[in-house]
Image 1: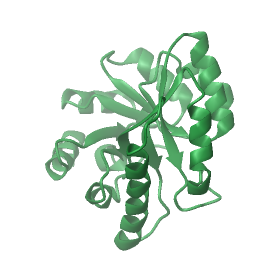
Image 2: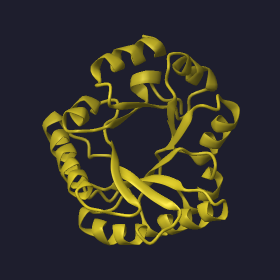
Image 3: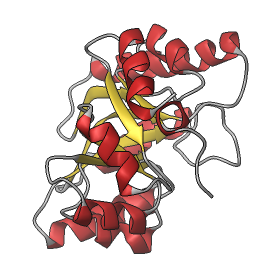
Length: 218
């Protein structure tokens, strides 16, 4: 099946209020163009260098999302390039984003990445550390948290739904509170293999790579 057919099939399965992001990492611009021509305007990358290259060489109305582990020394390259950083995952990264975006007098829109499965192999804020982290976000002037992002542990559909449901509860609890820099507008959860379960549990944004473009190029 081709890229356009894959997008068409996914769009049939997701509600209108769920944003579909095409995860285009390692894929050539020709593949992105095929998705673009079918109406996709949100693309995601997990490497800063690749996002910068594509942003500079592709249609200017595209919204670029950064979804990978963001190294502090690479933050400066995303200024004026990125629509949304999904992987705000540590205090040191938060402070670096604040510093680099302040230089450009630009607001960095981010999602707080939650390590919902408490996996050592994954980045993210632990649930019990979240409120302390939010206190530091609230002191920033150039970083806004627009919601949460999660990458769940691998499991079956039942386990997936459990993690997604747990994340949604955190999202809903934060939504009830009044913050200056934090607004729970986006719940980024669900990828190619589990997006249906994520949507069932309240996801507002899904990140699809192989489901659109096929197997990733190494």
